[in-house]
Image (cartoon, rainbow, N blue to C red; front, side):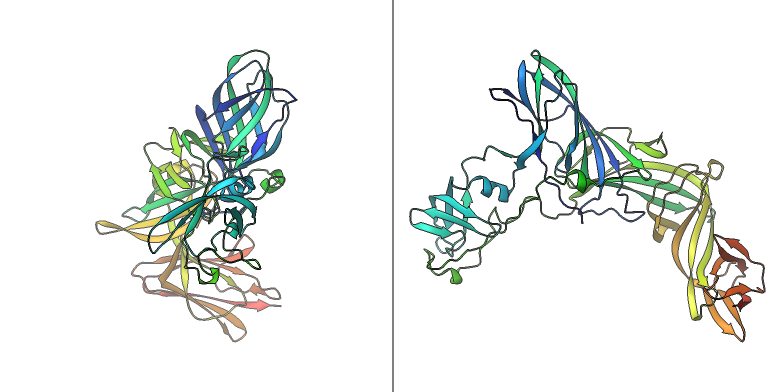
Length: 504
């Protein structure tokens, strides 16, 4: 599971003396380039914790005073890898870089208010009466909070009454929004356009295909969605969205880049009893079950995606990026927090394909009872066959016509395919084509049956056993990827067989 990265405030300390603070609340424009999880292969996106990453580039306009100032870039991604951040366009450059502040969370709020006055509010469930009194937080852990009031020292949630803590203000080192700060020195007061670029975790993308087989069963229409997941709590409105397909050469992991970042503190408060303590409203052991107060859960608990937004007006443009493929969404889109965005990726009509049935066997194996064959769809990814485009990995739903309706034939997965490659897609098992593998004296026999009213093409792959190899086949065999390949056509409502021997 991906470790949630705490969005950090990178602070650049200034030398002794006063300097100005400059706030940049939001970018004027932003570009988000999403890279897939390199370990996911053709599997589905982890909707709770996307394991890919993104390169975020923000354009911001900032008014700088003369001299030294600290610029606060608010609204960066909470999965930001601060060591990767680059700021260009500052006339005085950047002085130095250090990260030490924290994002607002329940645990950070409690930790930042130790020894400070707060308000303790209690509600009597029997009468509904609310009482409020001043208190001071004396100590805290991840599970308990000790307060001092005019009546003495007590543990929060030990009174037997629903109670919570409220604050007059935030500690000065806590930020409500993920923020990056830099210190710069400008020779004169000036308004500048700067670019902030950084890597951020918590993103991923995949292709999702819909294949519709034509009435004749020889061509199909192929449509694909580009599905982008943003697991951050930061929104990127009207962003330029791009996705990169292919395996990126990455020699370091993101945890090592952010290894100095503090882990996200956890807070789950309950009554803390100590010797001699008496709850002011009855014994703590007899306390009524209390609803969780606002401090009862960490700010960034595990969560699922909130929504999937579909945009299909125009198809993404495919470009070359070295050995990788870049897909550029042709219009600005909202990349919402904890959500998925779908835009049209590609659309190809009348792709010529063929279907066949297959099984993978060991030459010395035995299948005494009939086993179903797998249905496969195959086409050559060339323009003259109706395709001829790079096909990123992803899920594929295959539909077949049935009267006036289209019914789901299979829900499968597809790996990456380049132009010119032969594409093979598994389309489930067939209930009408079966295989039996059994010993016959000193040899072996494969028996195929076809219960369908039309002939069925089959391709059976047979691997030589560890200590025995297939010899003397009764039908011609070829080799594919180091395995024996038996190609046959089973007649309608008919059967076919292959006999061979094993040699030590």
